[in-house]
Length: 373
Image (cartoon, helix red, strand yellow):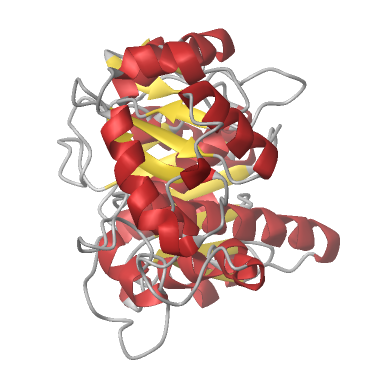
């Protein structure tokens, strides 16, 4: 779907490479510039799954040759992705002013945790630090325990990579209409805060308050995660009255007066304890047999390996194995089909190929070269 979109990626770790992979999954031509061929940039020496579908070259950006390579590559590119601390690319002589002078329609994508400015802009951090500051971590986990992070998902991917991707594509559309590029400042704190909008919108409905342990997801009995007899877990999300009624019917509790008033918050702790005892009496497989594929809003908690074998995910081809690794298929789907991602290159696999094209002074031809596997 993104055929004809040209991306140069200055490889780093985390959300930047994920964003570039996502764009490559959707058909963009991505050239990844890695620091070394030995995996020192954070990727294993045999190639990172985050580089699937890309072409990989190795360059030292601290040298004149490395900087010139970047300048040549961006001449006919739509966007560049970098994930350095603010100011590093400028010190290398590869900041947006320099690159956009060479290519005025270039969209310059900057991926950081704290953003390009602000009191914390130069501080180190990771996914859990960013989402704790943005407010996105606050409601996660049981109220009796410290908030727990869904590692990489809320910050690096959700608030970071995906916001950078939509920012880049928006900038590219604008550049193609106006001929003028832009600088995309994608901060994980910004994106993960913006992701809270759906949750904040539920406050008017009374589903969420401003206090941990007083919300539907962390104190009710009908929207919760329960441990089963075999140590596995299942989830319930029976918010709507018709789904709640069906859940009680399935559990043999339809005539139990204790469960009649779903939204009686005073009863929630007691009813949650009762549900916890009930779900601990059977295995996860037994609960799946009873509740899965019904309208009670139920799901088993699966590991990625278990998820890959689940019949629903198998039917949709959500997971596959390639390059000796379990991988998830590109998303979303178009016309009912998931795209097949490209192979994982070894670091520097395309260095000579791309150098030869540039030496032939046909930089435009670079983007018409077939992707090598």
